[in-house]
Amino acid sequence: EKIRIEIISLGLTESRIASDETIEQLFVEWRLYNFLTEETPLSLPKPTSGQRIHYNYSNVIHVDKANNGARREYLKSMLLKPDLHTDSLQFTVVSDPPEDERDLECEDIGFAYVSLREIFQKQRDIIEQDIDVFDSQDDSAVIGKLKVTVEALHALRSVYEECRDD
Image (cartoon, rainbow, N blue to C red; front, top):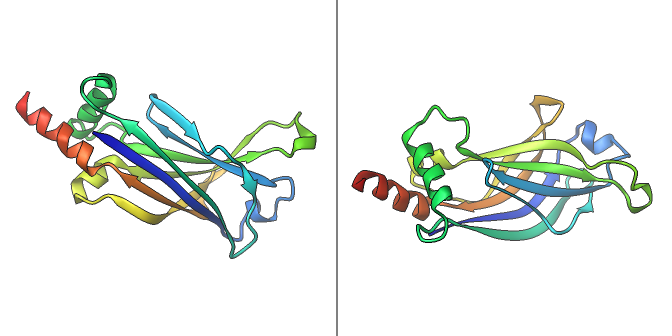
């Protein structure tokens, strides 16, 4: 009764991000609706063109009935009400200011999404798949690829069975 999220690697395309010299270190944050926000423990040097940086970061969201009722209720409502715009895991690529410039803020530079509803509809987890990272200033521009794994199908099936039993 869990959802496993793995952030494997990040590669950038030729974009304003790649050429921006003030962006040196990157980390990735992920968020599930309003419940959870986690980030990779390390920020890594921005990859050069054609290179990837590897986070190899994994995390588990527990959605068992006994201890995580609110998360289960959220998953139920997401499966039952397709109009919610809350069915996605959001990944945010964040620029971490260099050590010597602590007065600078972390800056969100790009967003990527994985739809949990789509995993359920297709009956297929996302395994080591590249997803587009869209520019935070222009959501039509792809600035990179984030390789992720999202294993949620088993938990979503369990929640769905529970809906049918209610």
